[in-house]
Length: 172
Image 1: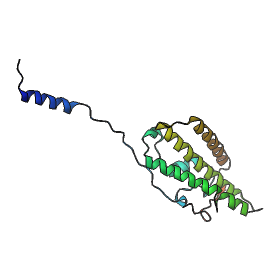
Image 2 (image 1 turned 60 degrees about the horizontal axis):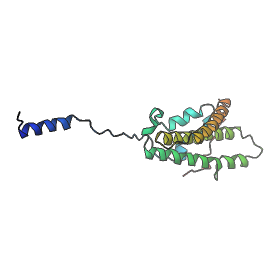
Image 3 (image 1 turned 90 degrees about the horizontal axis):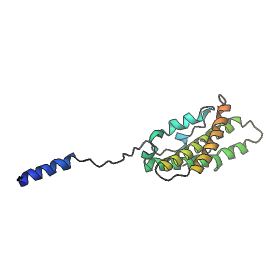
Image 4 (image 1 turned 60 degrees about the vertical axis):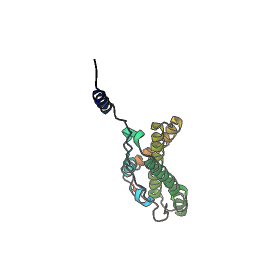
């Protein structure tokens, strides 16, 4: 049986076209870098901090492996800024100390909501890293415990006024 070179070539082309196409993981970008004043959750009312944080950082938690490196960096940078809002100059610790004997309940509520922000971003970043192959389950568990404690404190204060520190902390 004789096959012409054209028939063989046509057969090879058909086979190569029918083969699987390379699968490339699609990385979705969901976030943009913003100043602290645009993503802080401390102003308003206590009781719903976690939902407020999740609204500010809408990451698809069902597919953390596909989170882009730039989104992960934004989450990590925002966490550092949230921590600075707690301990840095003009942050919650400074404002609570400056209030002296005055009622600091609203500031304390704001600080708790800020801790929920900071810890949720920390847990989210660790979970993304784990999904992408860099797992540290002990650290995830430790930070999740802290997060859950602060969520409980926030819910306990539900309905109370909550005040942020955007007037004294620039967070740039």
